[in-house]
Amino acid sequence: MDTQTCGYNISWEVLRTAKNLYNATHFLGGTAVTPSPFYEAAGRLNVLFWHSIPTRSTLDLEDNPLVMSLADFTENDFVEKYAPNLQHCQHWVILTPPLSKDSKKKSFLDSYGSMISTGQGKVFRERGWWLSGQDKLASYATPIEGWVAKGQILDVGLISALTGALQNTALNENPFLDDSILAHCYRQGTEMGLLGLHSIQRDIYATDGFLEGGKMGAGVYITRSS
Image (cartoon, rainbow, N blue to C red; front, side, top):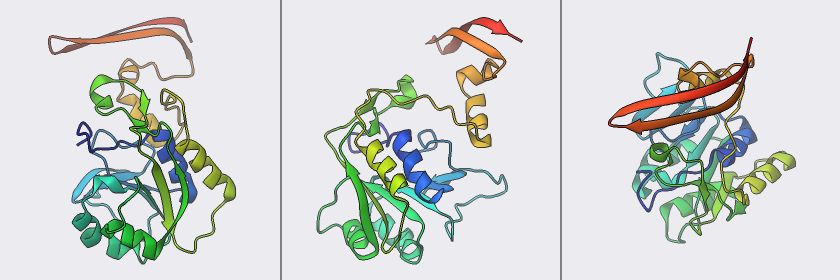
């Protein structure tokens, strides 16, 4: 889905600032390899990508603050599977490209939501980034709007941070250096993590990696280790 021209993989900086509005724990959208790892749970439709509670097999949306990438759902899927729950909840953030006036999604947002932020910066990771390993950002000439439940009073600074992220002009995504337990788990599975290099006791000078003939290799030069 991420490689399709109609797909939008929102940058992690935008997702982080959206998460901070309500300290969201759940993310709805994307695929198993694309959502940002600073949510406790992520999934789409009937598929659970991960959950911080290993025994869970489904997303428990009731009373959990969430962020949703609306473009990742069809009109009918959103209206039938998510709208009934969201219209009774208060702590949700929906990120979406502009919608047509006759859209069912637009009708829901007009009835139950308020747009708090918009921007047309480099707010998407380039399609297929998880295959290429690139951290480049793109705008695709497409704005993104941020919506919350109608009547919510939010911190002005947090709204400003989301707006800033949506108007971002940086060429690349910032490194993911969150110090949370989830972030640690995520980094342990990266190339650097598998090499055992995510430690404050080491200074890294340079790393390199390659994939050839179906085999992955990596090298690292460490200037100090204690």
